[in-house]
View: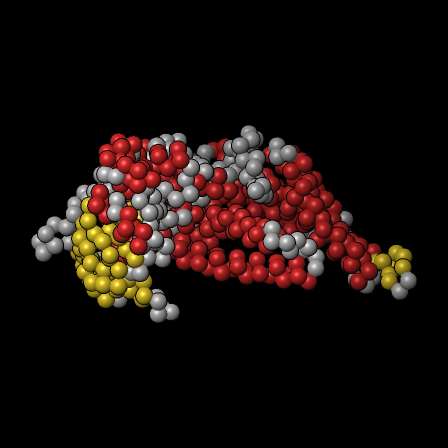
Length: 260
Length: 258
């Protein structure tokens, strides 16, 4: 079974791939927050271009990036369609009873640009390392251990569960209930999901037994020291500096050019 | 010592599941140091339930269990688990970490060993199962045979004196099964192996305990218990074809084969 691997391109070489996972995670996260907190569409556009540039630097194939972006586009599309008609303000044109406003359009634009920038930044941040390294980075950054355990186990078992539900569906289909769109099909899907729940619950019990029998006492620890060097510090510092600069730019432009 | 130095002494152990089904009924047996004991019986005989008792995952309801001279009680369960390794039937349950290294290191880390020793043990356990260089692999990308071997390694790294194995060769192709058997033969610990693979058990175990309906119905030399067609048939099992054809002469062949 083929499945979605966020770390499919973790083996490539780029400044992001060689970046220490902890420093990379923290600095790019700062940049993401910085972009989300901006409201000036001019600065946001710069942020979006920056995000695109970082994706290019990370050498993650654009086709792979586009493939993931289309899901984001689906969500953003809903906002872009609804907002211009629902926010009141200067009317640009009307379609029947609906009025397309300048304010609404700008808001939609701001939200889309933020969404795309942040999602684009996920690629240089997460797709440039093995997912395991990301989990370890969280562990070493002292993210609460319960959360780290949850991510570890989710990542380990999501594929097992996907396989399980696929097997259940296949076995239902192979006994002749092929149409997924019918009421019967939905019932079968319900059965499959129910089975998955029961099986997962039981598997959870067995995994817990396996953990306890190897001395599990509530925390999950791993070894692996990351070595952070001066290059990592420099990269992290530059990204954080850019994040700060975006806000300095937004602040000055609001003073000299006026807010939009 | 009151247990005569036996690493495993089980007396009158009974266990009922919460729905009232009896899983174990008055089970008693002893295992001597370094023994390889086969645990056989039809599906649902209580083999897995028994194994889960022997490192304290299930707690006894009646009877007594003594492991390595310690009665299996709450206060001892931690030190018993360090010395009794349990390999689960489904490697997907056994391997829960995201890399082979982390999984094998899980036990030793929990034992509080210093980092260098943990690394050394992981290296050693991987060598024992013949999977050097697999450290950074993800369990979900391994073959079933590899997963089974890593499962054994996750327990070996804790340096157990007793290893309990639940169906170590199920779902393996013939070559992987052979390799697994060779590996099991090489392990020095006291072993209790639950399996339906009678031929393998004849090859690597000296003694066999036959369970049915939660009761011990036979306990003796593998050469006696596992070659008795009547006895095995009565309890849902079957003697290997070689034994059917050649009687006890087949045993030498099987031992040589495995």
